[in-house]
Amino acid sequence: MDSLTIAKLKQAANETPQEAFFQAQVQDRSERTTKTGSPYLELTLTDATSNITLKVWSNHPQFSEINDLPPAAFVRLEGLWTQNQYGIDGKRWQLRVLDEGEIEEFLRGNPETARKQEADWDHIVAACATIADPRLQALTSKFLEESGDRFRRAAAARRNHHARRGGLVEHVAQMMRTASAICTAYPDLNEDLLLSGVLFHDCGKLWENNYPEAGFAQSVNLHGEMMGHIPLGIELVNKLWRDVLNSSEAGSWDSLEPSNDLVRLHLLHLIASHHGTREFGSPTFPSTPEAFALHYIDNLDAKYEMLSMAYEDANELAPGIFSKQFPLPANPIAPLPPFTESPS
Figure 1 (cartoon, one colour):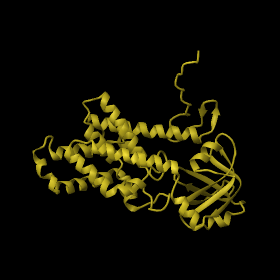
Figure 2: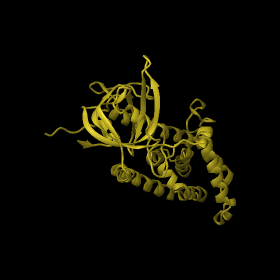
Figure 3: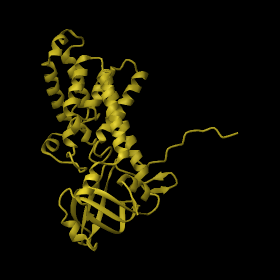
Figure 4: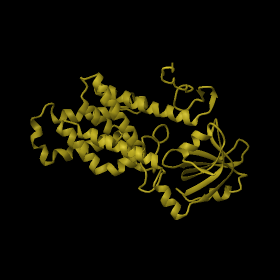
């Protein structure tokens, strides 16, 4: 029987039923009732690569045992897995709790994902090192030094895109690549400011969408729930800014143009406006070239990830047409392959 990550399982089961096992951590367990009044459970299971929701019906032989699982339990599930319009479904599947050795191995994560996130982290550090404005350079360096470990654990979202441990690093690194590319097409953009805005736009998610040091289940806390990542990000950047202004290197910054406070204000505007509209949580609208660029770069990378997930997870309704996935507005269509010369 094959061992698969959750991401690989969803991709494979979309094509053909899979007899396989996978390991996961229980992120959430909720008790529900069918229309006829029968109880069932919904398990949200997660690993380093992705997550799934699995229904446990009351006639499952382990229903009571699963209902008594401790929070954030580490488990192994094996069975015959299929993909339908509601997600992954299993037949004749069984669950058991992992032992300590298996948990230790599981927490090392998927090697492929770990390698990608390490490369993305290196890109973020290298991109921040290119920032010429000494104030933004000091600010980004302080953030990476003080919050790097927490940053590397955070997700970019709860479920819609990059919703996995380390997903924020993947999201920010790709946005930085896009930002640098766009600056070559629009050379009047302030690349120092735009790269800093990319780094900090979701920094509040270090609290809103974070993970414990050992685990793949997102934690929930009062700061994230009561404030949200945009106000948290603004508060964090203001604190970091005060700290760097009190450093010895800040003595010569008073004579710099644009002024210290104007640079800070423009950076805060990027954080405040990056969702684009108040309807989606921004307290203000984009009002500068860099703010518009950041908003569309963020939206592009999120949508690209959602499409990639849809191609892996969604049912194929007809050749090249996949079932609609929230929050995409329509059925995803398979992309057009690149043109290749026919051999003569």
